[in-house]
Length: 336
Image 1 (cartoon, rainbow, N blue to C red):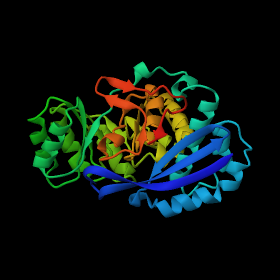
Image 2 (cartoon, rainbow, N blue to C red; image 1 turned 180 degrees about the vertical axis):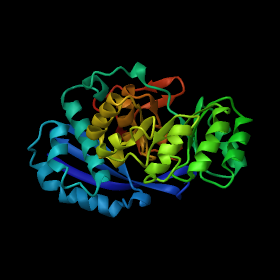
Image 3 (cartoon, rainbow, N blue to C red; image 1 turned 90 degrees about the vertical axis):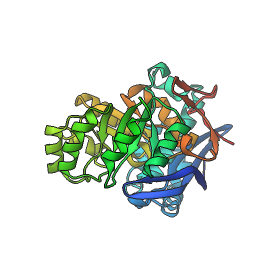
Image 4 (cartoon, rainbow, N blue to C red; image 1 turned 30 degrees about the vertical axis):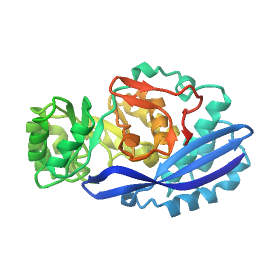
């Protein structure tokens, strides 16, 4: 077994702004696992909000080299368990390794990942297309640039309702709203009433992640379903979100990969919660991995590669009509 990894810059089509950060280039770390003629690929992007940099991700991966390459594992779940204590402080690095392990393992099984998991790609929900915070004029322009039936609108400004009212004039598409922790209890409850009249499907993470008491009030009075993001990072958070949110948005890079994400989905379903997997502006490597588990989900946000000016990989192709998988095993992605 051979482990290697490298860092790439992913230029974005447009400056991407949310409530707590803005960027024009997204750094990503690509992991390769090689066994014989088989190569598994994994990916994690960096994120300053979570303190995850290319430097600390690659450092953590290097520290894992011995137990990865010694090969005392056969299935990805076994590698995840072996490595979990080494990756306690860096789930982003663990995600890239876990994804590469799943890609390698299913290639060696001669199957696509969704086939190995017994899933049907016909069950994949339509992904949303994300519109980052900008001037209203530019946000309208971005919608017209990519006509889509479902938009996620990033909010967290002092004129959020003005934005939604204006965008609604230009499309009949369904909206999802993501405030990224920017609202107060009063704003979330008040906004939900008008948003419910503007064909908004749900509100994602309206309050700061630790405001559990506030979320109790919003959950009680909101006119829209509530989806946790920053409040649901790893497995132990799922139960904490029950009774505060109607569903959870799992990010593979934050959770530590496909292995824990599958468990989180199962746990959320057992609690009667909706499930969603989101992206962190990955290339088609990370997005392809999401697509393979998307049949398990109620909602999916896997538009990351669509937001790039230039992709570094070829993988799944996403349209409003559905997802086309390449005729390759594993997650189906390859570097270009």
